[in-house]
Length: 177
Image 1 (cartoon, rainbow, N blue to C red):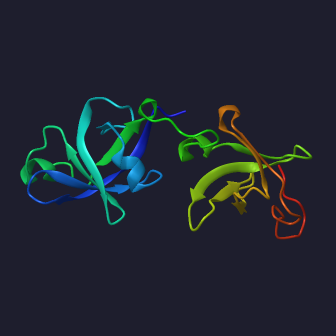
Image 2: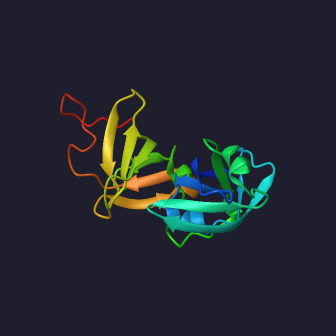
């Protein structure tokens, strides 16, 4: 599991006092606003403390320690910010997207393997998992309680109870690996 996870990208400055506008790639702007420090490398490295943060129009406005004016802030525009997973506590049963990506998708009843999760989209109230099998065939899976039996990223597995045809190939047959 990755220790440092993408929080988002700084897209512009805000005002003249050194605030930056973060486009959140994480759960929400509210989640990003609660982060105590940021990093600018996927490996962590030097941390920068967040002195203040607030949500504004779906974005997160942040004041970073040592960034005291618009000229300082411009150096952060278009940079990806990371957070340390040790700085946050997720509620029981919640996972970081990075932890779910790459998990094997298994049938809860038969044990058949359908592929691995290669992407997660958030188009509405429920996530959509992109599952890619060994032959490269792509299936979209709604991550709703009716179909999702268990999320176990710590074991690298997601178990599902799909309806007939959900993982069918173009010939109408089951496409489990």
